Length: 411
Image (cartoon, rainbow, N blue to C red; front, side, top):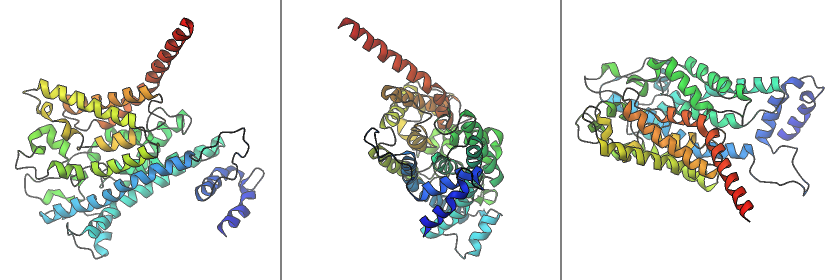
C-alpha cells in the first residue's frame, strides 16, 4: 500500500509535475524506504551490494551503542549528583521527566535512560530538522538527490555535545557545519573538513560558556553541591592535576574502568570507550571504517604520550598522563572510531591512512599536554589533519608513480 501511494505521488514530483522543484525531498523519502528504481542490470557494469545508503546506515548501526549509553549516562550523572545534594536544573526537560513520575535513583537503569532521553532526543530532533532542511534546500537549488550522509552527521553531532546546551545553539551549530563545512565545497563527497566536527568547533569557540566548565556536563544544578564536588570532566581535572584521574587523590572517585565503561561526566556520546570499541568492530568487520586509520591514531598516541612521559615536566603535570589514560578520556575513542575514519575528509591511500591517523594521535596528545587550558585535543587534531589528508595522498601517489616508473624503465 505504501509503495502504491509513493508511486501515485511520483508524477507530481517528476519533471513537468506540480512539485518538480521538491523532487529531491520525494526521492530521499522513497529511497530511504525502498531500493532505488534505477539500478544497473547489464553485465557491462560492476555491481556491488554496498551503496552510499547502506554504508551510511552501517555507521548509524555502529553508533547505536553510543546513543543508548549517552542517554543512560546523562541520566546517571544527573541522578548521582542529585543524590549528593544537587537540585535538578530548572528547565522543561527535567519538568517533563518529573511529570512522568520517575524518581532520581542512580541505580534505576530505566529511570536514567528516560532522564537522559528527555535531554538527548530534543538535541537530536533539532539537529535533524535544521540540518535536514539545509540539505534539502541545497539539493533543490542544485537539482540533485538528497545524500544519505547527513544521517551520520545528524547523529554524530548531538553525541559530541553536553546535555544542557541551549537548543538554539544546536540549530545554529548544525547549520554552520552543514553549510560552511560541506555544502560550500559541493556537498557530500566534496568537503574537506568533517561537518560534525566543524559544527562542534564553531560552538566551542563561539559559545564557550555553554559548552565548557562544570555545569554543562551534568543535568543537575551543581551550585547546590558542597564545595569541592563538581561535574568537571576527567580531562579537565587532569589538566589541573593528573593525580585526580589516576586514583591518587581523594577528590576523584572514578577508576580507569569507570572511564573505560563511560560512567563519568563528559559529552553525551563520547564517554564510553567500550561502546566505541563495539562500533569499531562493526565498522571494521563490514569494511566501512578503516582499521589502518584507527591503528595509526593508536600508534601516534602511544608514541607521543610515551615520549612526553619520558621527558617529564616539573611545571606541567600533564606530561605524566600515561597512554592508558589518554585513550579512555575525552573524545579520543569516539573521534578515532567515528570521526577520523570519515571516508571523505580522511586520506584515501592505505599508507596515507596510517600516516593520517598517526598525525592525529600525535597532535591530540600535544594539544592536551602542551596546552592544559584546552584539555580536549581530539577535535582540533582531526580537523587539522583533515586539511593535510589530500597532501598526504598526493605524496603517497607520487612516490608510487616514481617507483613504478623506475621499475618499468629498468625492465
